[in-house]
Length: 330
Ligand SMILES: C[S@@+](CC[C@H](N)C(=O)[O-])C[C@H]1O[C@@H](n2cnc3c(N)ncnc32)[C@H](O)[C@@H]1O
Image 1 (cartoon, protein in one colour):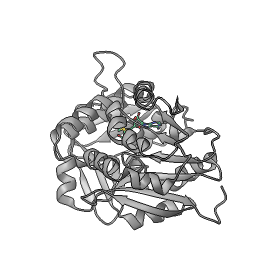
Image 2 (image 1 turned 45 degrees about the vertical axis):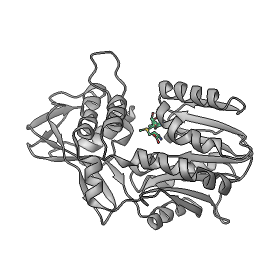
Image 3 (image 1 turned 90 degrees about the vertical axis):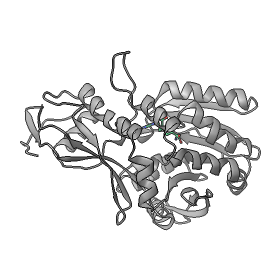
Image 4 (image 1 turned 135 degrees about the vertical axis):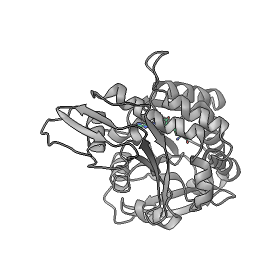
């Protein structure tokens, strides 16, 4: 890629992230833009819809199913490790199906639960999710806000908050982003909180490739280029001229979502031109597959120590409970 320097001040985060990505300054930074919503019926930006289609149809995409099994079979163990009177504060709860299969089975077995709070950037997901929980657990105090969880300025002031982040979404963040993201959330959650974080610890390349390197995942991952094309002021970009070709790097636990250009393109933006050659690989985002100890160490950098770790039958999906280290400054 060729770039020309620019000193323009960016106002818009997506624009800044996309420019960093196109000029090759940062790799794998586009995860926040994956779940785009169409603005009208002809809009090709359909990340959230394509993700659900992939979940429903790709047999080998095990993450969702195995995580659901984990909550359904071991939710009571996780709940008893947390203890009574907790308020579960969930980041990015997701679709109604995700609430029904993962969150609800867990909430049902939490002893004397004080409340549930959902925080999601999608108002639609949030409304449907809260509705499910209210109708299934009518006695529980349930609330939610539509917010970007990377930009929170406060969290509800409750006695015993448990920050719940499922779906391995934390593993889409770059490794350098995780500790600062978690410690920022921790500062807002106060002295008496704990963390319940779920990620995929699978290190087996064959099953990883089966899970990700398939047709529906490709359509979902390729959709991010339509989001860039729609939401960033560029010219010359051909959003449908990319082919999904993931790569696994076992040394950095980085499952890289890579789009390979199928046509040469000259992308103009902000007075700059980026040339992309046919066959050039663009690393859009990652799904990190941390081994258990590596993940615990990473969260340790944010000021936490592991309390317990629960795994599904396949030993791939891991739900970690963390508590604040005694010397942490929360
Ligand atoms: C694919 S879903 C994963 C959902 C869910 N955690 C699960 O286990 O199925 C990602 C969820 O996080 C939400 N989300 C993504 N980025 C977000 C952000 N920056 N702030 C708040 N919510 C976000 C999406 O709207 C969606 O509900």
